[in-house]
Each structure stands twice: as structure tokens, then as C-alpha cells.
Length: 259
Image (tube, rainbow, N blue to C red; front, top):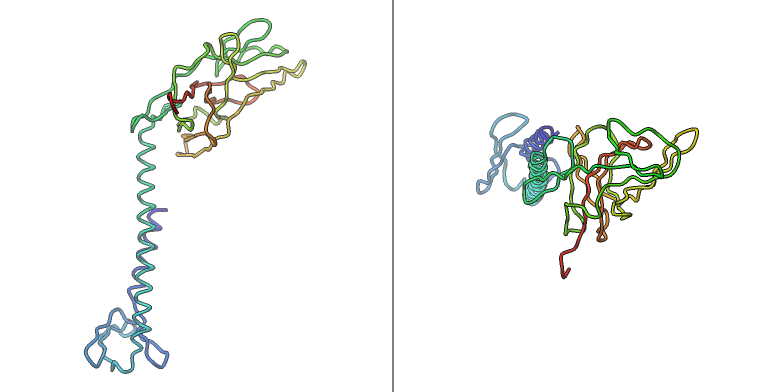
């Protein structure tokens, strides 16, 4: 696509190099270039591929020069747009190159990508706790429970209310940022209800509205909150709805003192 755009601009530039040399009777000669020679104009005819001359008194010089000036401005504007697009594309590729291709969640410190630690999640109901695994979900038992991660606070803490995160998906699954709540020394990711008989899993997370920008075709996304976060505990979660097979990367937002 970038090559095609550049070739198009080159073709336009080549076409625009030809100038309409207007005559006062309203007609024109299509010329590659022209030169003013006191009382005459010397020009290279595109049609006849040779140099010719015509009296200056027959030329509408004002109209000719106005069109040449306008075409020059147009080409300069198009070249500037293409140059800016190239700059943005180079910056995007540099950004992508800094993110590891291993599945996970990352954040930038300067120009270095730092991985977030994958949290161990558990499902708690009135029968106790069960550790959840993405590749081997727990046996489904009817009732209500909660999806939790241990501890009241995350080890990764941001002081920016709109942190920019990168997620490299391990499969084609749902993902997002979720607000956590504290309960009995743990952090609750979501409430879970398992319907009797059908064993349907109903999940009730508190999802944060986010921007999603797909960076590559193999599942690399840049995500950040649509609105500034409130201080508290959060997590990025990759999951399949109704499967209880989450992968969770927890973090907290804590404003710097005085902000």
C-alpha cells in the first residue's frame, strides 16, 4: 500500500511536470517546459517532442503562471502528507518491534517493554476454593461464587490514570480491563453464577471502557482506558465467556502524592 501510494504520487508528479502554455485565444499548448526570451516564448512541445517558439504577445502568461503555481502547491502538499504518513508508519513499526511476541501483557518504561506478571486465579464458592487453569477449567458445580486473585494489592502500580498497555493474545479470545473489589483479603475479578441442570456459566465483571488498537494480524493490541481510572485495583483479562479459563494480569492505579 505504501509503495502504491508512492508510485501514484510519482505518476502525478510526472504528469504535473507537463504545463499548459495558454494562448490569449483560449487554446493552449501542452509543454514540458518553457522559457521567456524577450519578445517570444521558447517551449518543448509534448505533442511534437521538439523545441518551438511563439511570440510572447500571443501568450496568456498570467493564466499560465497561475496554474503552474497552483500545481506546485498541490504537489508540495501531497508530498508532505505522504512524508507524514511514512513517519507515522515508521514509528508504529518501531513500537511493535519493542514488544515481545510471547503471549502476555506489557507496558513501556521509556522505550523498553516490561512484562506484567500473570496472576494465579481461583474460583471460590461455599465449598471452598479451586485454582483455575486456562487449559483445564474446574469441574462445573451449580451455585454462586467469585473469581478471585490472592492478596489485597497488585505488585504492579501505575501513577498514570490512563496507562497504555500491550496485550499479545495466546488465542482468539475476549480481553479487556476490569475493576476489582477487595473481599476477605483477596481481590474479586467477577461474580459467577452456574445455572443448575444446564450448567451455564453467567459472569458479572465490572469492565472498564477502553480503546483497542490492533497492531499486528497475529493478535497484538494496544489498549488504554477511555476515561481516567479511579484509584484502585484493576486487571487485564483474556478469557472465553462461559468457560472460566481466564488469564489475568493485575495492576493498581495509585496517584502520586500531591496530584
